[in-house]
Length: 262
Ligand SMILES: Nc1ncnc2c1ncn2[C@@H]1O[C@H](COP(=O)(O)OP(=O)(O)OP(=O)(O)O)[C@@H](O)[C@H]1O
Image (cartoon, rainbow, N blue to C red; front, side, top):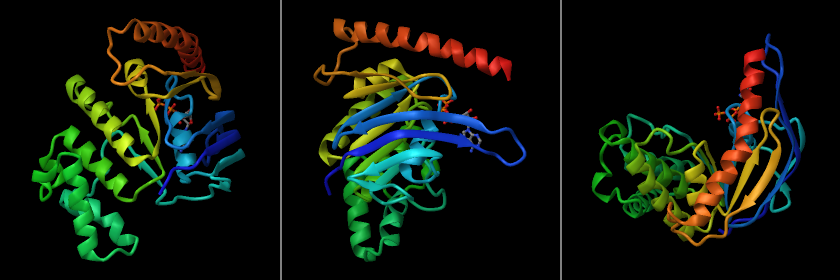
């Protein structure tokens, strides 16, 4: 299944929690995500990055604007769109093979086919020898790989990842980034990944979308056309690091000032 263009036009979101003041999280957010593109969302805390992912996933209504995938409006969740969180959301009482095959069985695949596809995927993420372990028997990095396998089992056209490696140590994080790039290249899916790490954004992205402070909108979009793997000592990487640090500094100050005023 090949990825399709996802078009966000003038998207806005205001949260209206019962009994509490409403919060405008996003305003007038527009971007085209091209098929097979790797987009990274970078911005200060609270600027609406996770909110945007939930709406792309079809898990939350948008307040204004439209989101379309291949021309069709997104109005709810779909197996074409997978979401991975910071902590791998696996069922603790199932083995990782059962976790991966669970989603497939809901889609109506026979149990033999589910099991076979789950095992193939787990082998492809380097967990071939651990299929019958429960999630709490695995390390954080292994759990995240299992979560990737579970999301990929559905063959999504768009994979969304909300700070997927934030809880991992630096070395495991670097390995997971390499692993993700390989999976992305093999799958042909588009990826939208949220991170607070400038280095992670530079290592992974085709384009980095820098958000303003809340209400979040596109401050700027920076294409990165350095071939991967991108060495941290590459002068172009240094330049980008300085550019992103500068772009974010004002927005982080604004976000802090606003939070203090609350
Ligand atoms: N379910 C909700 N109900 C009410 N307000 C919400 C809800 N979810 C998020 N918000 C508010 O929307 C704003 C944006 O939140 P969001 O989590 O999308 O930001 P973020 O950029 O992902 O933040 P962080 O980088 O800290 O994870 C925040 O002010 C937050 O308090």
